[in-house]
Image 1 (cartoon, one colour):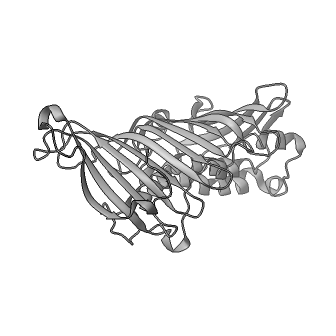
Image 2 (cartoon, rainbow, N blue to C red; image 1 turned 90 degrees about the vertical axis):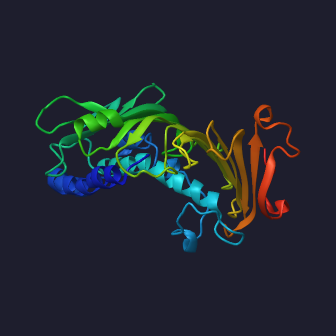
Image 3 (cartoon, helix red, strand yellow; image 1 turned 180 degrees about the vertical axis):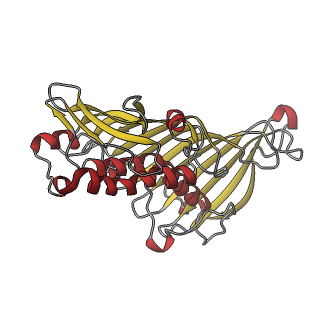
Amino acid sequence: MFSKMYFIVTLLAIVFSIGAFACSSGGDEAEGYSPDESDLVFINAVPSPESLELSIPEKAQESTAKFTHKKAKLGETAEYYLVSRKTMKDLNGGVYYILSVIEEIMEMPPTSSSDSERVWQAEGPLMALDPTVPRFTVKKKSADEEKFSFKLEWRPKDSSDGWQKIWWGEMQADPHEARLGEGKIIIDFDTAYEMDPLVTERGQLNMDFDTRVGHGRNIEMRLHDLESTDDKDNYGPASGTYDFFEDEDKNGSFDYEINSNFVVVSDEMETLKIKTSWNSDGSGQSHVEVSGENFGSQSEGLETIEVQECWDNSFLSSYYIEYFHFDEEITGDLADNPVANDEQGEPESCPFDFD
């Protein structure tokens, strides 16, 4: 899961430092810089932060609502709406803040230009305590000027070489709209940690995305071997796959599967699947499945816990039910299997059918 230490101290420090770079490294030239058409070909081939942001409808008065690990009652903000929203915002951190840094870098004149490449490089560390120097490169991959690669590199501040890729990817640019397209991005937390001890994440983030006009927004994130020394929140991002889709009318879905210690009565890891779907007006629902081999001594034979929850366009819970699925070979032929529990509200209030 993404730690507060890394994103606040490391990435946001770079954001603030770019301002110093603009003053000290760019000077009046940076203040008066306006990219020409040849620069814009490269700048517009980098996805914008907004295009890759995972988002779900929310109202201003609900934006501060927190997930508290407590089951919502009817008329309260829905539990799994908050779970899904929090997970999206946590996932945004690893991509959005780095893209924000790159946005600032690309406001400076390129330090190197050619027909096939643009490079933006700081002359030294962006902050006095920063152990690295950044460099951002965009390179044309095809003659038709629509496919590009890009990478953010660091090198040790006390060396003129030793560049290491931290964040990189490629995009087939949309010919109709700047900063949109189809491509992929990788963030290597292990290499980042080797170069900066403030990085508390370990593992790798892989993203595939398609934001082309007429395709909505399709974003798939895969987190590999993700670990953190901070923020032990079982509902935060973990190794697994996260699929986000939003159509042009802002209806969407967010579907993910991870390993998590969801049932805290044991130390065993469970498989957690959550599929959240919503309409553009905010109404939506979540289908949750938790499966594992040990749900506690009082739950012999229990294989899967299933939850269905729905909410209205004010994000208030309108329906909730739990199902307990048992292994009949262990528990015998139960009269009701799965066993329904704690049903609240009416299923007709749900905007979609449950799979």
